[in-house]
Length: 294
Image: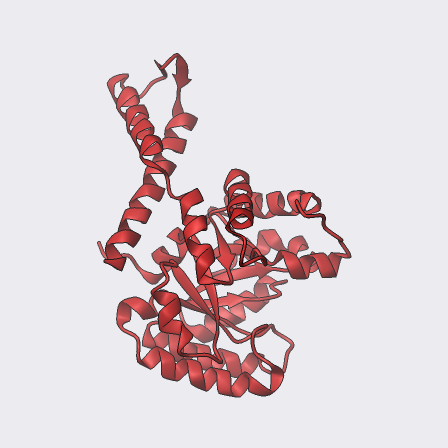
């Protein structure tokens, strides 16, 4: 069965931003190996350039094929800004052309997400970007809003809004990250997307941040440079040993008739099986990505 746009967004690990004011970068971003590309109408675009950014993106999308369009999300401007209404109209046209949907910044209410979904159409997929204390307060409602496939954490804006001064390890944000992960889990949606790593010249930092995101239960990260995609995938894509072990777990439980068994001296039960199934799902996604790039 061919995956839907919503399936693509739910399964994606890497989300690469590209400014909509630089349409030539869109095909390059799509060729970078990133699962999803986020064309940005918000932070990357100066106020005077907002209308031009909409026009530039429309022209760029017209030059893409269907498979490429299905991997494009648009970060619109927040509700309450002078550009929100025009963004919704332009977004609806892009969704009709086959773009996946929208990243909704400064998400703080389910009503806003409902308005975006209603304007963009039933086929639009939404990612709600939690960037404020009010957004955190509403995170349960955001995760359960119509057409929301993922939550994402805008940790830089969140720090400013909350008055937090983080150290290099961002330990101050661990409770916030966990709250977002648990909200997504309770809502039954895909694991959320962690925020960007601002150091684009340090793959070791990207690897460190990706490992933290994976260990905390995130399903991927936002990226701001194509060079960040490979280190991210290296963390989230299971290696051959992990895949082989997951298959052994499946086989052991199958031979045990679905009950508890022992493998390599360790108890194997339903939670262990679920972890193995997640490993195999991520492996299948990585293989699909590799096939699509060839």
